[in-house]
Image (tube, rainbow, N blue to C red; front, side):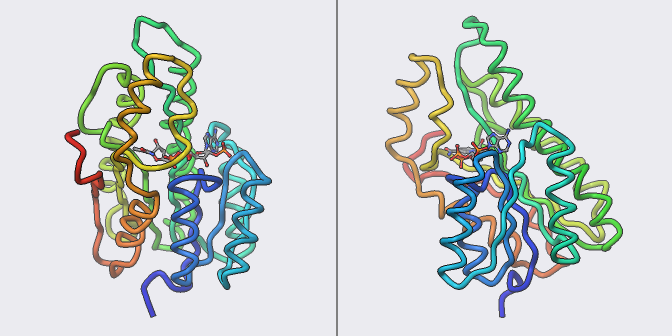
Length: 245
Ligand SMILES: NC(=O)c1ccc[n+]([C@@H]2O[C@H](COP(=O)([O-])OP(=O)(O)OC[C@H]3O[C@@H](n4cnc5c(N)ncnc54)[C@H](OP(=O)(O)O)[C@@H]3O)[C@@H](O)[C@H]2O)c1
């Protein structure tokens, strides 16, 4: 029996890409997975597929930019299953562009989803995990949490922030609660669809040719979860072998 078996795992951004792959993999390893994102129909399809494959899954629509949605997501899981073992703060957007394009709405969206979304996950789950005296946050950052490149200044800033928040949280809550930062390199998903800027889109199309499958990141998340309770895998960077960045 793996250390994942029987755990209650909440995943934001589970309607596609890394979140979807993580839900599938963890469910196959015996976790009960609770999927959250805005597209409810997509979530319901994922839940049906996991259930069909013999797993246990449920879902709830949420927008991570709304604190009350994230709290309701965590409360729903607690009421249904009695506890929450892991929250994977994975939802994210990446509308890349140069700063001089002044796409302020997109900057704000990245700040709201990528930073506030993670903080809302922490705010919703931390009191419960402290009461339980156990739990784990897995925050999904990026290789953009370690280096900046043109068109990615704001995206990278949000991911540097997720890295800083994760490390601060780890230092404050260590003892009972584990904190893991997982930073993917270019990975096959819908992420680049949020780029409205033509130039950034073209560069990204080229860059994404070496993308690794979302399952590669799901395996890293599973690795961090399956460790014994006294082992905290604090940071994992997972990128294509061919990636220079
Ligand atoms: N793919 C890569 O190359 C790569 C590299 C580094 C880091 N990452 C990070 O990996 C994470 C997952 O992205 P992905 O690559 O799997 O991309 P994806 O396929 O686009 O998935 C993003 C997920 O986030 C959800 N989401 C977006 N805005 C949301 C909101 N306001 N509230 C709730 N959910 C929201 C989307 O669902 P709905 O649209 O249904 O809400 C979707 O399920 C992100 O944090 C991303 O920054 C990805």
